[in-house]
Image (cartoon, helix red, strand yellow):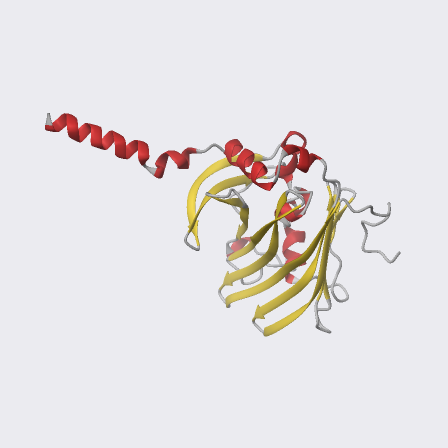
Length: 280
């Protein structure tokens, strides 16, 4: 009798255990994420997203802090990300994807920023529409039928005391052990809260002139999204933080770019030649 009671207790504990929640398939996570953003009708009606706000920049080596303004504009095929910074040496950050091609202008003659160089080295970040997450209409999860994102389950992980579902993202050209992409979703709200791009290189792989490889064992770009609010029936992040950390023989270098969205403007009519950094 005692054995039967013990078995029943174990069964109840097993059924009530959070382990069952950890077995969500990637497609289930994506479905819940899209429902969290908004209804299918609301999402389908989106033609453009424009985010306006304030920019932040911080570097630990050398110690630099700056701020300015930012505008992020997108449609399903294009991304325009322009951040002004209050610095003569680093006046702006421009990240674009126009008509199927990345656009990463030099900040000074022949020199890209560390963020621009990292993205240039890893073309899938822009090519797959990952950069900017749900702030951008290029977010590949918005149209899974067209984009066919390849995801595999990565279990769960606690991020700042919040449980998140983790999904491994494999670019269309195939993944590699050297460069990996992980997407994180809040387990309660299913907001997309983090994308982690991890690049690990051994010294023998280093090639002269390649950005982010010099004296670096691991270079990780992490996009963080928070302050989610509902605008016209769509739940969108109002804070975006990109952290680039290089951990190598010469120490840890960390750079941070922040976007605080003050206003979203949805379905703005844009000029046909809007998506370019060239002077109009």
